Amino acid sequence: MLSIRNWVAELLTALFLGAVGLFFLRASMGLPPPEEPGVPGSGTVPMILGGFITFGALVLLVRSLLREKSERLQSTGFKPLFALASLIVGAAIFEPAGFLLSTFLFLSAGFTVLGEADWRKALPAAALMSTLLWLVFTKLLGVGLPYGLIGEVLFR
Image (cartoon, rainbow, N blue to C red; front, side):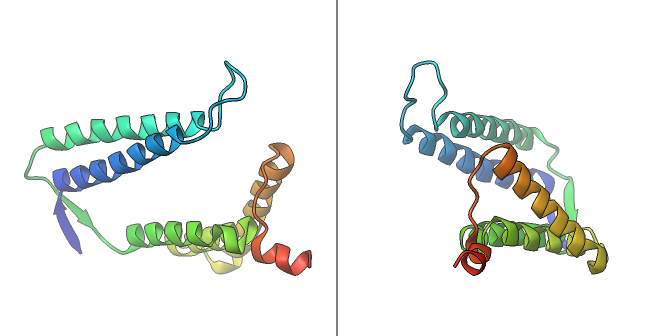
């Protein structure tokens, strides 16, 4: 069991989120400007997202510094670390594995390990959700998602 002071956990989280927010802000400034005046460009959403994340990090930073210093945070298991690790692995395999496969694996792991669902229910649910998300993004919103391994097998 991990025991850490609440204010230290919030301080570390605020610093991490601040770095992420500043990264988004910096990266958005490097994107090309909009083609037409008054129309949002490709950097608009990352800039807004970076601003929100940075603002939230500042609020959390102030809150952590004003917090009662004696409170301790108790972590009872590996689930938070598993969630973070599965998110990192899911992002790493997103392009090579493709949207459908990486999302299916991510959701399957989440449903079975984090949600403690029976795998006989988790696998069909993950397959259904992955397919529905793919349909919404590609057909309804017109977003191009990577096919990855599935595309290599089906379209070669």
